[in-house]
Length: 215
Image (tube, rainbow, N blue to C red; front, side):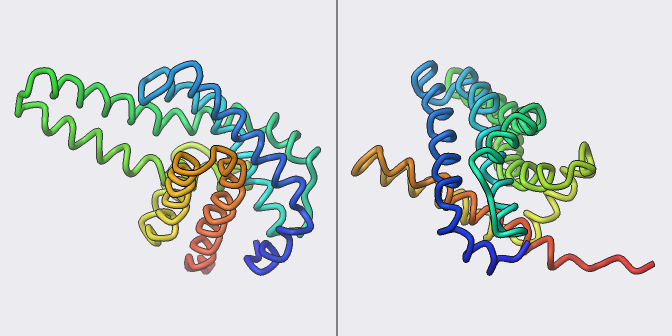
């Protein structure tokens, strides 16, 4: 994937990116309406609905970086094809977050110092799982042969190698949500595509820096 081709291809492929962004936003409204707040049901809904749409968007961005072209029909096809894969990968950070919430609630209710290691462990797992899942979704969508343990080891390696790049995508999401809450919710429609571009660029520029094995 060429970052230069990706940047040049954003404007010509704006309709596909906009439609994909709308799909992500529509999917994200379901957890907000059904289970508002931070809770296990919301986590499951995000994994079931938002992760597939976001993965299809990211794969569309990867295609733009590779070929310079993407279509709305192509996004729809990716959404259907990648749905099961995206749900499976997204369940990893979702489960970690649910365990963290459970540990926090029990610790808040009891105040027991014995629960602090559990809170710390689940918190660390969540912090690692979120950017690693982002990398795993992008990698796995573009590389169908990369699955299971090898996919996650590769994703964790990329995140550990350039953590700031992956944090940038997450910070962009948080900044966009804050801006939408402060000014206008319509700004959320503009958020998914730029966040996907930053995340995809983080994955493939970091992957390009890996040493090539010599035979």
